[in-house]
Image 1 (cartoon, one colour):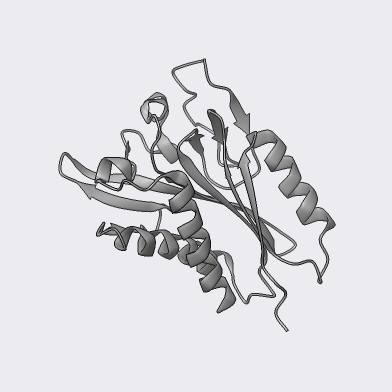
Image 2: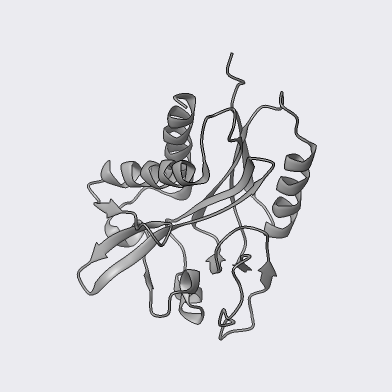
Length: 210
């Protein structure tokens, strides 16, 4: 029988504290440990993933840069951004890294579609993207995962109603000139609490089918 999926609504948390908690949870878990989803929001922070070699450092020094063990390069987290961390036993749920990435991307894409926003994923650049009138493409959600003993942690972030200017000081996800957008700028009035809950609902429904 499938283990229950535990949802934790953590409010605003420090990235470093949550990162250490995810590592500890994953190291300590056993075959009977229930999978968990953590819904949170972080104060301003740049996070640099394992693929950080040759990443251009931020051009501003008022926001801390934290090295982390997720995949990917550099991104920004801040108030007004929904963050969902997925702590899953991939063997139990019959998922691999590629299918998990697709599941997370499709969850965001379906959420945006419910607000009449067309979004897509890209094969070689994990995340969710939308077409803007004044730019070829813009990123609205980022993904970064870590797999250990076939269990994953870290997850996704969706830009909702935040100050986007810190993204201008980096090459988002390592891509120079990549434009970043958010749901508020696309006409969605729902706040982080509403969109966070909707994402959790959709993600939970997908995981229960695995």
